[in-house]
Image (tube, rainbow, N blue to C red; front, top):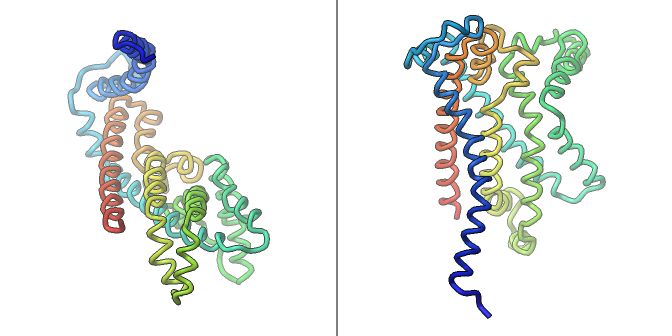
Length: 297
């Protein structure tokens, strides 16, 4: 016997009433910090002088936009995100295709390739700083000396490149994991048919593998972009934003305003600017990936 319309309405009302507390908590959890940030962005509020707060309107935004390191931090953010995405996507696809081929010890190799993703960012940064890139006792210095070359002081001579290498090493396993999983669903009959028709490895890779990995690439790009725009720990541990502002990105610049200069107002304005920049990059990437998927399918 079907329930009556009154009973269905009652059940729907009960479900909605049970969902409302969760919705309200979620909105409060998202809106309260945002509203507080908006409020402080219009205030002069220095932690050293909390009694001298005052309304300043948009002066904090003007100060943040004209800060000497602002445009450098924006450029560093774009370079970091773009470089790491390029390395992880291209390297992830190539490595995934290689380890998808059957060979002895395939399972162990896959585990070893994925394992760096589970290392905490701070630990990974310390590992690279002290054990690999140290100009005196690091592995790279030992290799350079073995070939009669002078060791490179990575974080002083090539600071931004060093950060890119560290972060790419952390996120490459994530891309490999996504791509290897996607390759498991590749139609083997279609692959064998292409090989029987005389298609070489490059042709198979171009016309079968790459189109099949279009959506996994979109997932990798979107997920990594969200995290890379908030990159902080690796910079803080290795270079502390230097030398000068060579490795200062937007989140690190906000940190310097809030906890080094104690300027909560300017830091709040910077946080809102960072949110706007992140949304602009996200929209750009979504449209770019959407067009690529449309043209492929």
